[in-house]
Image 1: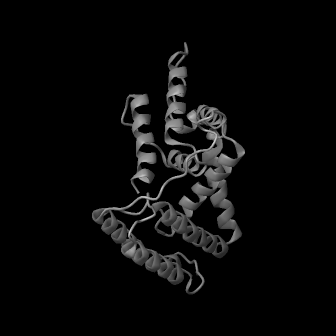
Image 2 (image 1 turned 135 degrees about the vertical axis):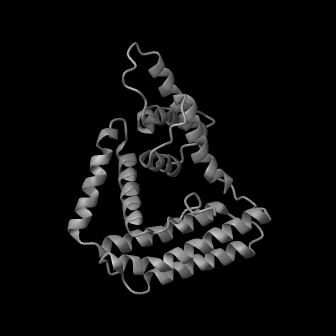
Image 3 (image 1 turned 60 degrees about the horizontal axis):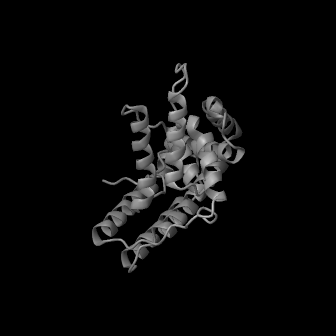
Length: 240
């Protein structure tokens, strides 16, 4: 699990170092980092692209336009990734390996899943309070699947965090599909318009696939926040 957390935290730490301030990354930046991770861009490649962007900016005569968002670094990061893939070393990006969790880490994972299961059970009532009727049994089924995943983690000799993240992602996709199907067209259109407006100033330098990822992630974020749905990811699950 440490590898999943490090990808995000090290990028934010390097971002702060490059800017020379403790400025935190925005929700859009976090979504962009997720898209990098899902695209298989190694951490060191992202960091090199960020550093190249700031180095280039520091050489410009006019520094009025500051690097205020990670999206300004996207083109440099993607260029670094292309070089990485074309090199003999980067011809085949290494896949994450299974990690054996210690007892404390295992217990923390089990507790995180338990809290998330309890949060999921409350979603239908909270949605009903906002006038959204969800199909019966959907969240109960997802909660049961997460409970099964929790039991597997408790009994496994080695915890495969990559596989857990994949299974969590599939469950989250089911939740997203359920919410989208339950909402009327007007609400969905307003939501997507809001997301499009937010992404408008960050489109430059983004490839179509990354832009599509960002739009989906921001839409998911908005929907989950609206109905108080917990994120099913090792990174987003509450630690305490």
